Length: 270
Image (tube, rainbow, N blue to C red):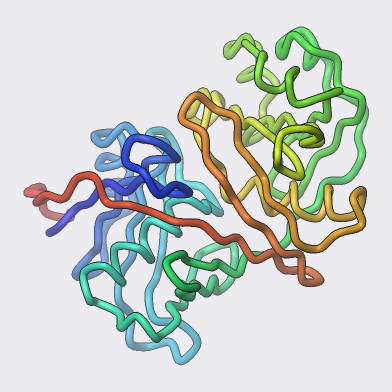
């Protein structure tokens, strides 16, 4: 079967967030999918599979880090849709409806040269900072929250603080949860907000551009900035841009993607 590596949330190769996309011809064992993800050793490997028994969806979609299956992944969904459109598996004028195990049906549409993804909003609730968080980050958050994806949101003073972080990954992993998203207002940066995302507990020390985290960032910053349309910049070494629109309990994430590798996976599903 064909396997692709796609850089998501970017228009240029070797930037944004790379995801492997393996388009399945039929059902595959989750253990086999996990081993493929370990072999690819990217933050996410996505497995879209055409389905014909669901009137509400066109493809099943699952995502795996090198260590675990996850409930939602934005950049690998973007990469999957990019591959299906680019290869002609889905006509450019038709939306793609992905059935997922834990996040409902996710719809992706072409928006000019970019792709727009309709995701569930996942706003954070305020919490007391987890013990050891400030020490692990090397910065003291001014506000801390947690959302239903079990991500911690840590708000710091400014974008420069976000960019300068050099966290202790072992200490962050010990905090548990899926990941820690650090954010600040984008004052003076040309963006509405900036962020970085660390997920050492699930095998992803720093994720370059995290679509699912923007399901938390969009409603958080939308409430504080009194806006529904915003642009976020994820300030990882690779960097990436995510345009967001808050629509009630949904978030529209828009970005570009580019294929950098295409090959044949010779290990048959077991």
